[in-house]
Image 1 (cartoon, rainbow, N blue to C red):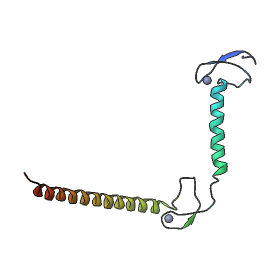
Image 2 (image 1 turned 90 degrees about the vertical axis):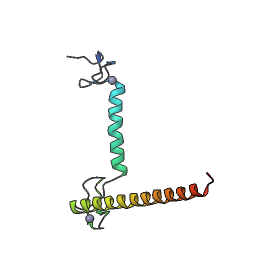
Image 3 (image 1 turned 180 degrees about the vertical axis):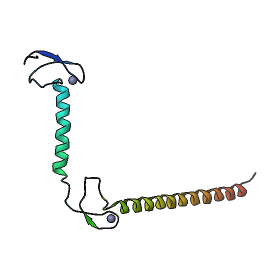
Length: 116
Ligand SMILES: [Zn+2]
Ligand SMILES: [Zn+2]
């Protein structure tokens, strides 16, 4: 049994620390960072309360989100938005490809104009 005030090794970093409670496993620094992490999560949750209702980012239906990242009302909207994003991605790339071809043509033209 460990005594309060005895010295033990931190189970996380191995540093020696003075035991303050019977259940203490970490040095003050490691237990502090755990507490800080928990506190920041708590702080985030308290400053960003999960709304009971949210508008679907895709179809606009009001739904109840399960967590902060839950912005779409259904699996149908999730796959539909994914498909849309893929189409948009292809469309954006098509523009880039067209632009590249256009520049390539312009380069060829200016090459011809240049004296050899
Ligand atoms: Zn530690
Ligand atoms: Zn939806």
